[in-house]
Length: 401
Image (cartoon, rainbow, N blue to C red; front, side):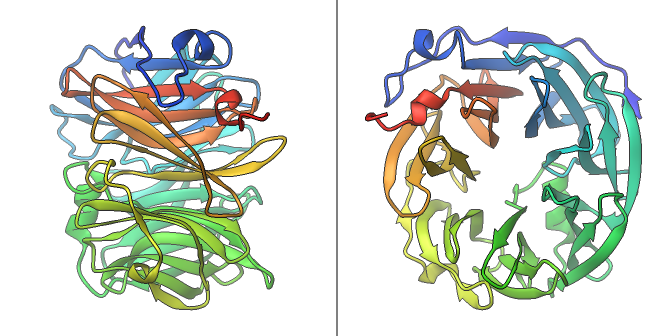
């Protein structure tokens, strides 16, 4: 299902604007860091970067959903780019699979993504990272995929929406991509229109996600999805996928934008309410109970954009581990909040300023212990294009190290 490829222009941003840590271009870019903008000459295309992976042999592959004003189909198609370790394009391909579900995954030597066909049926698509050729596709027997997660234990977990039963649909697949079990969480309200607008990039972009948690008796997954009239973070038992607890909010107007387990019952999270953003750097969460996010000790993040995308993740260094929360600010900056992993202590706040609006989509820790950030930039304030930023590990080391 490859599409005809139009030529792609690679632009290297020549100026790295100021930052709170005063890291200039000479220090960051030559060896272990870079900043790339991937432009396209067609004005009718809007790129929505979604996810990225670092390949075992070096280099990156990133995924975007592409909205074409002239397309007869309202849902964006899938676009993949492979780059070298320094961000130079090796290949780029378009696919007719629609509304890719956020996450790009490394699966048995292939790059995999979940997307839907024109009938809303979800498929896992596997691609050869060397050539971009599709090597397999698997019918996941669900509809409207919203997020996919591979747990590293040969399990694939996918979140979808069932418009027939008005339910959030979570399914677990084994290493052969065969369905093992699924669970439908009743939304109790018809939210198909909101889901459709999320998928076709014409409405609010809801923070659907899946992640793992572990505790003394076992572990499971936390899933951010529609459930019982609201956008909730639901904790699911790993063995049964049964819901054991949740963090709830007010309908769909507020919700949690990111979650990370710091240790045992200690979690960090971000949320939004009435357009403002908040962070809870550390709170004790009972995964077997239901709790209101307003009862958690939150700190306001007024510098972030309206209902900002926030990406939370762990940074493991040789000497310490940290929790990172990455987002975008009102003054066109990417911001990174760096916290100690097992406490609520803020270590540093890093800024990277741009002269155009930027948004963050995902970050990963790279093999050299630095990070790579995938985001989007609005060229001339209107053309949405992918942005890839590589930052070195030195930026995150305490001064004493």
